[in-house]
Amino acid sequence: MLRKTGFFFDELCFWHNMGSQHTFVFPVGGWIQPPCGAGHAESPETKRRMKSLMDVSSLSHSLELMSAEPIDEATLRLVHTESYLQRFKYLSDNGGGTLGSEASLGAGSYEIAKLSAGLTYAAVKAVLQGELDNAYSLSRPPGHHCLPDQAMGFCFLANISLAIEKAKEQLGLGRVAVVDWDVHHGNGTQHIFWQRDDVLTISLHQDRCYPAGYSGESDIGEGPGEGFNINIPLMAGAGHDSYMYAMDQVVMPALRRYQPELIIIACGYDANGFDPLARMQLHSDSFREMTCKMQQIADEFCHGKLVMVHEGGYSEAYVPFCGLAVMEELSGVRTEVTDPALAMLELQQPRAPFETLQRQAIDDLKQQLSL
Ligand SMILES: [Zn+2]
Image 1 (cartoon, helix red, strand yellow):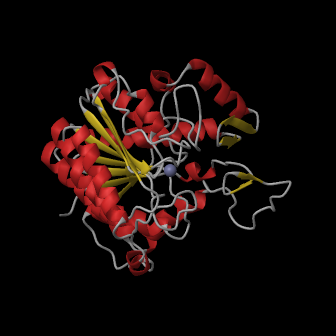
Image 2 (image 1 turned 60 degrees about the vertical axis):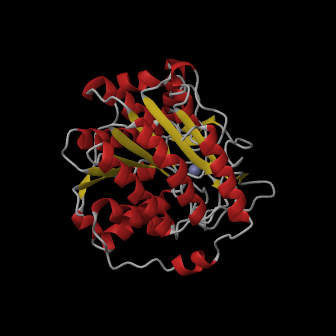
C-alpha cells in the first residue's frame, strides 16, 4: 500500500562533532593510535550514507523531503532542567567539551541538537495533523539516553520526549506509545515517563549492554505509571526469530491493550549483525518486518499514524540497507536495491538451544506482564 511518507533531515545535523576518539571507548592518545577513517562511532557518515542510498535508488523521489525549525526554548524546559541547558549551551558556545558520559560535543552542538529535536517534533506534528500518513526523522544527535539533567550515550536532548510533550501541549495528543528497538536500553525515555500512564514505553535491548549491566525486565514504572513501562532484554547474539517472537508475543499485545493514538519508534539500527557497539544478528529484512508489524498496529488503532526517529546504528556499510528497508516499508515503494549481506546474515542466525532459551525468557516476561 502506497503511503504519503515524510522524511525529515537537515545537513546541519551531520555537522555535530563528537570529537577525536576511536569508536567511542578509546580516546586517541597513549596506546590508542589515531583512526584513519571516521573515528568516532557516532559519525555523521552512517546517516549521510543512508540518505545517499535513498537518493541513488530514487526512493527519495517518492517521499516528502523536509527540514524543520529547531525546537523552541520553552519546550526544552518541559523536559530538561535549567542548569543542564545552561551548561550545555555554555560548552557549545565556547568550543565544545565533555558534557556527560559518552557525550562530548563540538562548537555549536546546542543549536544542532535543538534542530535534531525540531525534526522529530515536525514529523510528529505533520502526522498528527494528517499532512502525512507516516514519517521518519533522521535526527542527529540521537536522544533516547538523555536524562532531564544529564547527557549520556551520544544523546544531548531527549528528542522523542520533547516532541511528545510539545504535541501534548499544543496538539492535544493523548495516549502515545514509544517502541525503542535501538539495541541499547531507552533509559532516558523510561526515566522521563516513569510515573506516567499517558505514555507507554517499551524497550527491546541487548541484555546488560548499555547502560552497562542493565536488564530491566522488572522495571514497570511507578505510581500512575505502573504497568506502562516494559523492558525486553534479549541475550547477546539474538537474531531475527527472537526479535520477531518478542514483537509478536509482547510488543504487539501490549500495544493492542494500550490502544495508543500514535506510535513512535526509537529506530536504532545497532542490533544489526555488523554493529561495532553491540552483538546482535539482525539484518535488513528484520527491520523491514518490524516496521511492517508496527504499521499494522498503527493501522488498527491510530489511523496508521506512525513516526520513526533515528537513534543509534554504527556500521557505515550496513545501516544504509537497514534504513532503506524501513523507508521502503513505510512508503510502500520497493526499489531495485538488494541487500548484499542479507544471505550471509541469514546463515549466521542462532538456533536451538539458544532460540529455545530466548523464547522461554520471552514467554516468562509475557506471563509476568499478563499479556
Ligand atoms: Zn544504540
